Length: 295
Image (cartoon, rainbow, N blue to C red; front, side, top):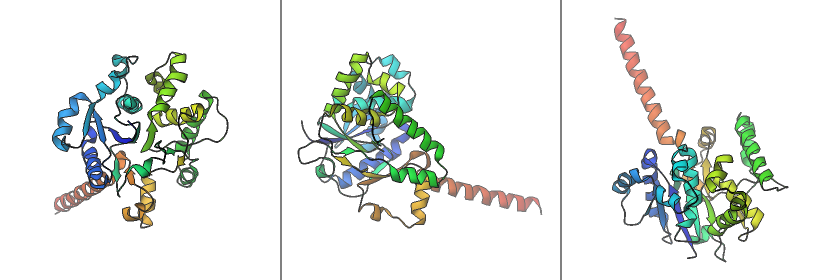
């Protein structure tokens, strides 16, 4: 059916963050968009007990992968988690109850009301997160992140070469992003199958599901391309978060321009607070110990 569903791929180490994401969906989902959550089969009971089942459509990663008979389950299980989760995201279209999806990660939070009109154009197709990333480039150069920027530019160049495309280099993220099943179908039909490849092969060679989608859309024009800036404010680096915090940027201010915010899980603010509090406690205990040992 037409429309759009929200999709998240998670696993047990992200249970707490996924739970917070679900609560934000429950709070702000104005149009009642379907929410689909996929986890490894071994994690299913853990997630259901924590999150509940009433308003979440549960999937197992194994079922998402199994919907594509050309993907070897053994090859999938042998992949590192960072890569296997991308394959689940890229294969969700086969089981998606809607034509489009908003693909979100567990470290995302909605911060204001949202609905279909935020993600779909009037004709029903999704907007495409697609931009040149100039602000990101400027931030990296100003904060000593040249290496990360260089690696990112190299990856974009490899995708352009693969699709034999000239012209500007685009960013198709960061997640959350909106995808349409017809783009994934055309990627498979016109690009992967003729080369004897699956999406597993594609992502193993060039690991970025968002760029496979974006460059395939530019190549095959499966849907109308209506570019949008990112839906969420994504703090990919700690430096970005600290920069905004020093400037007094609040979630209320962000909600005027974004549907949500992404706090990269490696340095999530709650984790930072915990580590700072823990360091303070250790320092205090150590100080008392040293003071006592000198008496």
